[in-house]
Image (cartoon, rainbow, N blue to C red; front, top):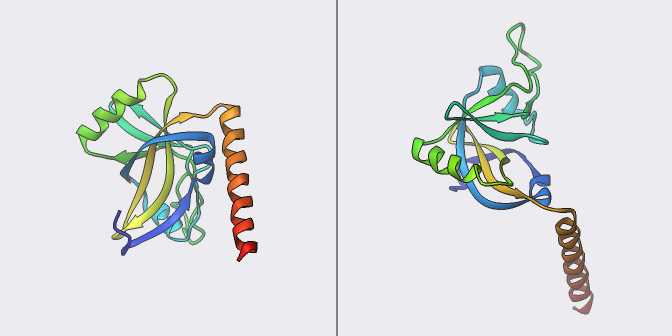
Length: 153
């Protein structure tokens, strides 16, 4: 991803805790005018959102984009399903992977690249409770080691 013209709007930090990320895909989003303006103000939340195939098209469900405060009468619905734009070959490959048991599509971050709203979708597999505990334990051990190194200097 080219970093020189990228403005991150929001990230789904909980996704990496709840899921094993297997693969990432970039997709465009079909948005209304007030949604774009709200995104530019950072009024978005990816919590509990997911991707779903319907009639061969990929849709993003449960993504909250807050209403644009300066819209007079034609504001958007905050949690409406939004169509995602990808090449047909990518969609077919992704559809095949999604059919495997336990796999899901989770959005990781939303950003603007060269003026266009993009979303990074991840092919993910859910973690079990003990996997989450192991990840927390590893993170704590790493923090302790970093603190010990810092104090040793």
